[in-house]
Length: 319
Image (cartoon, rainbow, N blue to C red; front, side):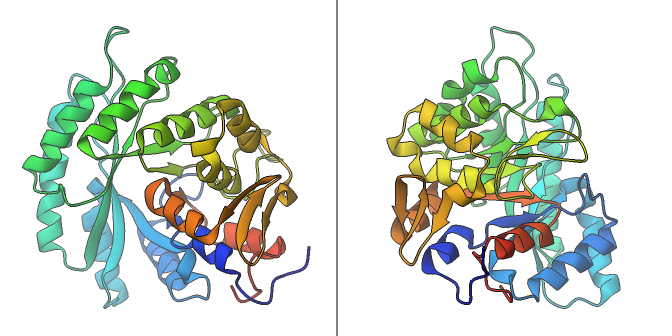
């Protein structure tokens, strides 16, 4: 496929601020100074319009501040903070509360770091009789008490056998407190990768309740594929983009077909629209979807998705 010479409006609408940078996390696991430098370089590069926030655990925000000072950086860095407390359900409430208090303090006392969003993993349920409603409600109270209610909050539900069964109720609980959701699409083991049907069900449930979501892990490349190094079937960010675009009008089996699509050429852009096979979304539809449904995704590499999109002919060689 030839490389584009200009940036088409639907491409801009689809990929604007799409990728949060997660260089601190596997498989990259960069040292803080290297990750901060790589983010700064990408922020100064031609594809910077696609780059979102720097993702950092709450426990490492002081380290990021120190790295920025050591590098002589003058501009604040925009971050999404992962509230990385214990996942023991018996200690989760107290641990998250303490971390949120610290995040609120850092928000006031660390001007070199601009906290733009929170990402909070929920602890697993203690018993099969429980739902996530109580934990989500408690989290809302904790964030309000910490004075952080003005920030976007992305809540990650545990990957468990009960997740599909409890998904609709969890999305409804998130909608009640006006939180967003977070979908983990991979990891360092095969079990960390949700199935096609699980991803489709998540996107459908989010659309049903009007809950925005972001994704993370395993999404370096545009289309679903089998990774040659690990043998893992990895999800694609174009698949998620299309599924979120068409979820309001498609049944779950059609969404599963989108998530399962392995032919990157099935996803097409022209001057006025984005399409998957016969389904089509215009520029305004894409803007609305990005604002209210698929907020973006975290990736430990920014260069890889940019290179792939350029190779597909969707980005100019200079992005």
